[in-house]
Image (cartoon, rainbow, N blue to C red; front, top):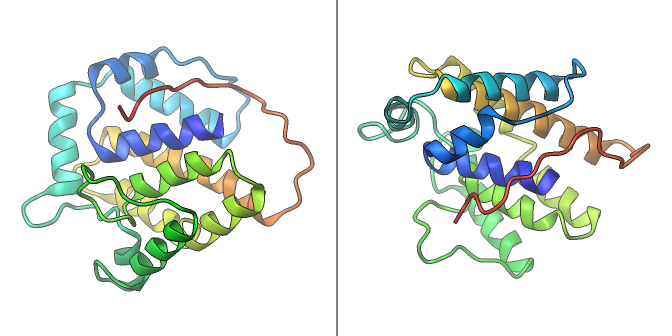
Amino acid sequence: MRSDIYLLLATLFRQAPSKELLDFLSELEFEDNGTPMAQAWSEIVHASKNANVEQLEDEYQELFIGIGRGEVVPFASWHLTGSLMEKPLAEIRTHLSQLGLERSENVKEPEDHISALCETMAYLCEQPESVQQSFFNRHLAPWYERLAVQITEAQHTRYYHAVATLMRAFLSLENVSFTEAKVSKRNTHKIEVKNLTE
């Protein structure tokens, strides 16, 4: 389940969602138990039911690309240092190399893009918890909250308000699980998201 959610976030931050993905998300079933995650799923479902693909593409363009730069900067270096291509990117590349991972040739974004980091965490979900914890605490925990705030406060945010809510709720759970002893690893709800990045 965790890997699927990381892949979903990676897909949503890499490009505007397709009609197929919107249809899938609009019919998503989840346990409505009043938790932040349940509220986030509810917001995603509602937003996906009312989304227009062309409008979403325009929103994505305004938020993440823009003319010169979008309203939102989805890179760790920028949020941690105020500049792109800085020390956090070098540290991520070093860490990825130590894990035996490298950026695909067809991927244009630097490795500190939120999509790349979520894809890495999806892969690491099959690795020992200590490996996951080290990568998350070093490369996601210090700045995901700032990214969520930047998205929700952006002028052109509509659908991506729901995406930011989901990211914040899920990564906050991850943050807690990596900083506190786990009482139980039993999932309270399930979601299947497959082949979203292909």
